[in-house]
Image (cartoon, rainbow, N blue to C red; front, side, top):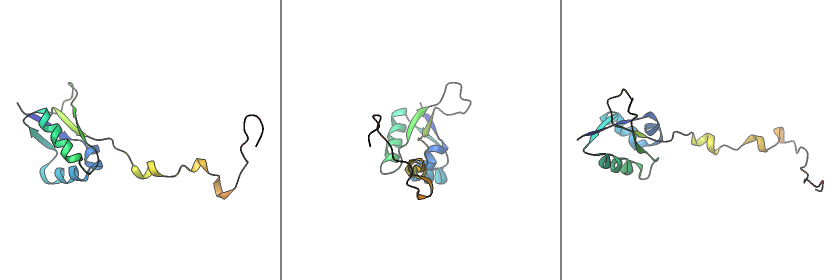
Length: 103
């Protein structure tokens, strides 16, 4: 029995090795078992963005058994300083008071 895994864009964007693999060998890969596909994903994740194998939905029209996926995030936006926590224009703004009214 063969297990066909298609690479989702999230995995390609998150993991450079996956992006290179898709460029060189295409977005679909066949394995002898699900366990072999999961080992492949684990090897790809070593030292790069985490990817894993997820089952395709039973009603999925694509001719694949699984997808190689990742959580697509924008690390730059996640690491950005939250501007709501500082006053605009360097203004010191009002001081906060405790619930008891003491400073």
